[in-house]
Image (cartoon, rainbow, N blue to C red; front, side, top):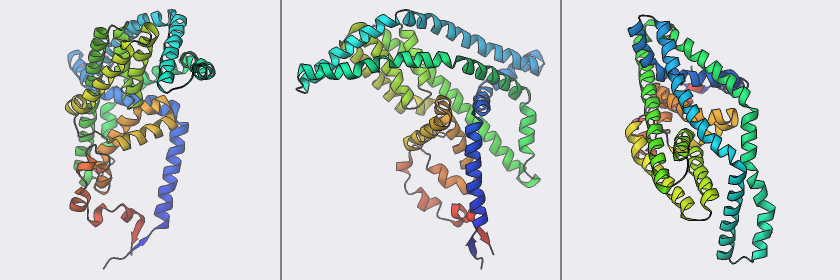
Length: 374
């Protein structure tokens, strides 16, 4: 009969690996963040790059043309955004003044409904509203101050994308031959599955953004909000950051509507519209387009969001869900970690019995990893 005892050495090695990995992730942000962004972009561009390679008969030209095509689309969006953003910046002082007036009107109304005296409301507005009004300016100043860093990261990202696409076969072969001959077939199958599902996830996410941009723009145009295209696309792009991004995507045009129309039905209509769109997106669009295979439950998503934000800031928040989706794919293909992958599922509350029915076996117990056989 086999006897198992707890291995202090294995447990210590595990803890040391976690601590060292966390430290390297934090200090390696300037390189790792662009590299991971590049890997996801390479997944998206690979089919188009391969098609261009077949047409030109040269992989390097295929990669270069695919990157140039991507840059032309990005520059077009930047030009469109720049023109509309210029209108906002040009009228920034006027918009800020109108926003203050609209907020004052709204808070006075709320104060009256709560039975507060007019002097109390005025005192509170004097103490708090001025600091709130400075937030957009602080965000804008901070963004301009970090523009050099952002530009450098984008350039590094493009370089990484080029080499990842150019050397993709060599990288794949290197990873494949890390498996011994017996496990190579299974390892290759797992890698192909990871690549396939990751590409489907990223393509689906891109399609969701396009759908949201169209819906947002159309809804804001019908409501009568100026620069509807700008706010619609911005809200769709912010949806990449789960929960926080979708909230900002609706809050920004609502504040803009408040600044332009005052405390009327327009800001309320914008908020109601965004709540409706996000409800449709979360329950219909994303499940149908992205699929349930890589969807993650809100608890894990929020936890990943907080960890990503703490480690890498905005970049970490954007990358949190795609990285967790890839981790989930790996876990589903590693027998020991399959029960953990179940904890990531968005329908976890409907699969409460799966651990008792499917994973009640020694080979699925994670504690066995910290035991040594005697």
